[in-house]
Length: 331
Image 1: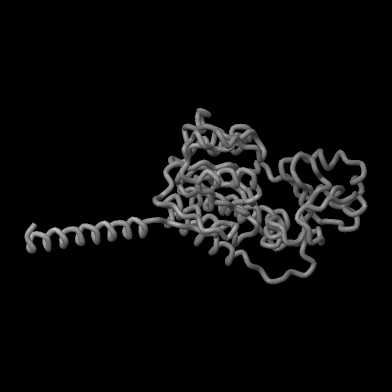
Image 2 (image 1 turned 90 degrees about the vertical axis):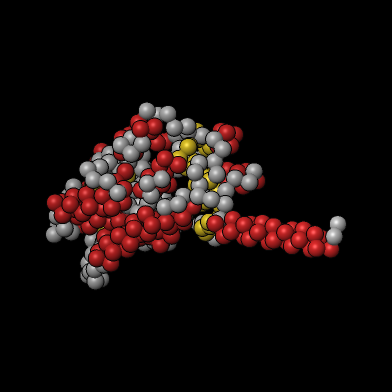
């Protein structure tokens, strides 16, 4: 090989190598990332096209992001929860026909083999789902976790999900709207603000949410106060404690009014005698684990302050749904 030919080959080789390196760098620069509730940075080579969601609240937010067509697996509870199924059926014909796979058994039980079979490039779940998280990440399947601990974490997690599914602008639109509404809802401290007792679902009247919890945040946002003064996530109390706290209102979630009114031990409680027991029904529009904690707070405000009328509540809920889901006529 002549010296000139050798130099030409060497030059072309270097140029080719440089081009490959440049292309590799470009590929890396195209990767996307978001920090989840664990503080872990989840990196993807590209926007997630096959997404498995393991909890209904998180699936709801994926549909808010208008990324439903990227979902390939959903929680089994979606088909079992009447109001959730009825609403999400309007957004996805696969849910209406019950053809979307459900790699879960209900509750927090999931089938990892079924999840793997769906070939997801992203799984979205709560950070309490530790066993599944460890197994999936051990198989190099990216997992984005959420905590829904408070308003800030809910919105940060929505932005993170939006980034990973390629819906950053949509996520920001929702967050900006909710931020604006939160500012508008702020009220000065109210003397003798009404106290609200929140009871857990399925008739668990003596189980509540304490200070620092998600429900506590939503109640305070409404302008009312949480009747439970305990700095605990989920305390169980006695009837005697309920009388001691003497809440102005009792709010039920996925329970019936009779679950309270039929309790003889609470028959003399002023809130019961004054018929100040209310049910968040249907529960789907008020899910506090999503940005709809805003609507939970608005509903509590209506029950707590008669000046905030039912007509105004309905109008603002309609507006919120149009922004949160990007469609009209869903409520």
